[in-house]
Image (cartoon, rainbow, N blue to C red):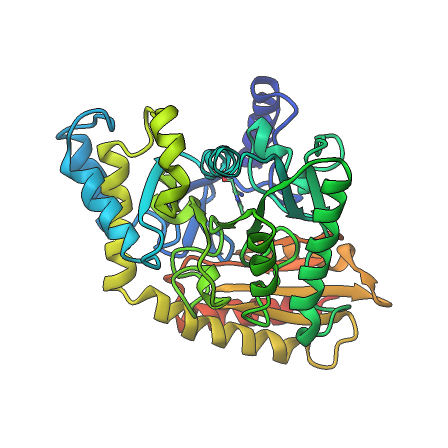
Length: 423
Ligand code: PMP
């Protein structure tokens, strides 16, 4: 059709102007023109149930967020070197969602910048250099954080001061052993750094291990490793870019499920529902010296519009009971997926918490990327959006906006049932 020809021309033009580093989702890339709530619409007017978007977390184009952004944009948009109530009120509100020990918050525009700042502060506070991450971690795009993002592949160097430990594994490690295993692997990584005369400054994890393949359970398994890094003189950084802002249903922050208080918490993605808002919450003493010696100014981070967006998102999560919805609707999805998976020897596990779920596809015990890829593309053709993740690209990742309700969850399950039954 002429629209398909138009899309082909757009892909070609896109490749010409953006170059080779960009990727599109799906065998048939999706050309979107509009979004509303949990729905996205393409250029042919077709509706898609978005079961993957954790940025537009309170729903695409939420009217309250749009209103807050446009009102502030039409009033004043300046940065943190002028006195303004907005940034103070938002920082105060955000900190109220955190344990009291995390007394300061600093604003950036991206999760990458938040992690980059966390590394700078961890290294200045400890006077050390070593960082430990999990095997398929993703923490962002700057040179420093791409060094601690093994999911980018071997082409992006890890650097001599970084050690990689195995991520949790739901298939090979018994739930009761998960915590001890992670701590033992961390201890080995610390010993390996020390063998090279490098002291550990920080242990950083995404507290739901999203890019590693999604490992939320058993809640609490992170604690022994966090206790260990502190005993060894390093700090613990919780990357909450994915699990944060009520997604796990059980708690507002992923680390809370593990019954611990991090030294620093990085945040991003859903924080402004698509408007670039990100940041760091931290124990005040960590930034004392850094703050006295190195000023921090981020031109757009914490500007009046960003803070208005962030505040509106917190309002909507509260007013619409989205943490509770994530818990309840997430449980419906998980139960439904378990029923679909029952009796299939090519699905080894269904796991997740709240509106963050994973279905692990296998073949004879090995990762089955072919099945996962087929299901993802089949669902896309039928108007449902998910993706696949993990070391073998074999783990279906289901992560809808937090406003997904029961009827849409049921619709999702019907589509998933049909898609899996086809292969
Ligand atoms: N940490 C995690 C866990 C992420 O998922 C991401 C983004 N995928 C980032 C950090 C980086 O955030 P940003 O893309 O906003 O720089």
